[in-house]
Image: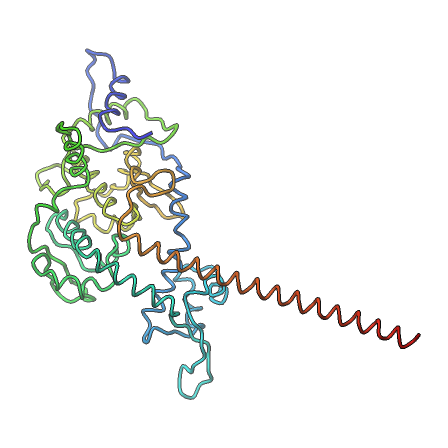
Length: 403
């Protein structure tokens, strides 16, 4: 059941200590919440496993000179690609991705099997390009927001390249998109160099509104009542908080919401206010991400940029009504609870159309493969029936000759 923050406050107040008893506010570091598995959110991650695997293999081939690679070379990279089947088996499972052909690696060597993008895959890549162009304004806004939340309004290019998949940035965003919007971005150094950064050139007030603030504004328009921005809390079924944690959470929710775009240089790192701001930043980052979830290790790369503490990952378990930390695949992944209903995304990012088109390509390839196998089985069955008929005819002829 999804509770608004005010509803949760009412619930927590009922569990509060009796009037007249002086409460001592416990430090954040002493508050512990037991991690609880959420099978439905884990399933959401599992559902995208094959899609991610295929995407990695496709990008590996596309990054090769001429977008072609000997199959045996790709076989040697299986471990790095986290591919637990042989390339030949992979190609049989996903026949719509690549064409195979024979060519020589060197002029004097014998021909070997090569892979190159299929016509269907090239058609998908063209559709992908059009979708990126269609949502260019959204991508620019996301990139601006990442810079605007950082303490110095500048982020390393390496970090941004590392998270391009999470936020839906095209592979060539630094080459084609950034120079196009010089009013917003300034590239210091060259991409690929050790010290290369992207700086924010101008501040757009429209971008300086978080998802939570926009939601409060929208609700105020509908109801005609000023709504206080705060977090939605989606309590897991059967989840239990100890008394001291319930009291701390109630008081913490009563604090004013701190926008992730505000200057918080005056806040102490260990204060409850800084905790509120940190949760706000994570909420905004996950909201901006394509799947409303990001591996914790990737978020950790931005600790200095967004002023996260060394123990920042404890935020995801301490605020289990806002986040879920999945351990699926032995990878810690921060998930935004409110973005999901069971294992399905509720508010889908427009850029998810790319993933949907890719999944459709994989599905069509499997269907085509299944059809080919079915035809082969039917032909084999007919051949066996014809062979059996010939054998019966032959035996009958032999019997007639003896008579």
